[in-house]
Amino acid sequence: MTLKCLIVDDEPVAQGILERYIHQLDGLMLVAKCKNALEANDWLRKAEVDLIFLDIEMPHIDGLNFLSTLINPPKVILTTAYREYALEGYELNVIDYLLKPISLERFMKAVNKVVDKQDSVQKDEAPTSDEDYLYIKADKKMVQVYFKDILYIEGLSNYVRIFTSGKPIISYQKLSYLEKVLPHKDFFRCHRSYIVSGRNIKAYNSTHLEIGQTEIPIGGSYREMTLERLKPFEA
Image (tube, rainbow, N blue to C red):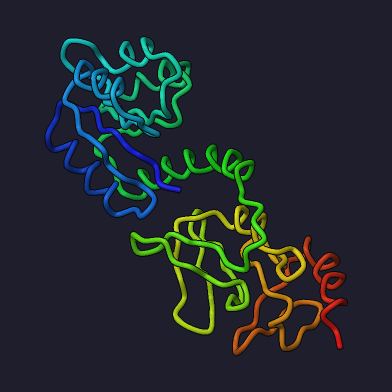
């Protein structure tokens, strides 16, 4: 999943900071930068956008008034130097409110809120193919990953790290999405941060699984289900 982003801000420095942050995150793509609401309105009429980073204090029409004119607007994250606009922004159903100067950490937190909202939609659109592989976006390309090659998957907030017999694959993806699309007969979640391939488990006890040279914890709330799932894999 890649979010197409539009920056609307009349300050070149603020535009530059947001642009740099967008380029640093694999799941975001900058489609345009606009210096006022009129330019943004023209852009939205001709192109699809998933997320707007919208400044409030701008010439001609301020960000909040512009937002109120949009019918079915994209997701919006407000950016401003003035804290007092926060309440009004949330009344317009914005995702988050970033106070300038914006740190990368705070920027990522706001983007994660957008991803969380998109996740339920993505689950509904999950593929139901009988293929024995899937494509994962990593390093700006789609990588084919065969189910038989996956040892386990670690969730890192809105990223996952897929461990295979080769090099780990890091992708901007939700663990819950992979839990849905991977074959349930071979893969299951043993911890809030891990999905494992049952056929690659070398040993286990009530608290840990052993895959290759790695010990993976069994979460307390997943223990009963995990031990039950392992029975079909026992010799």
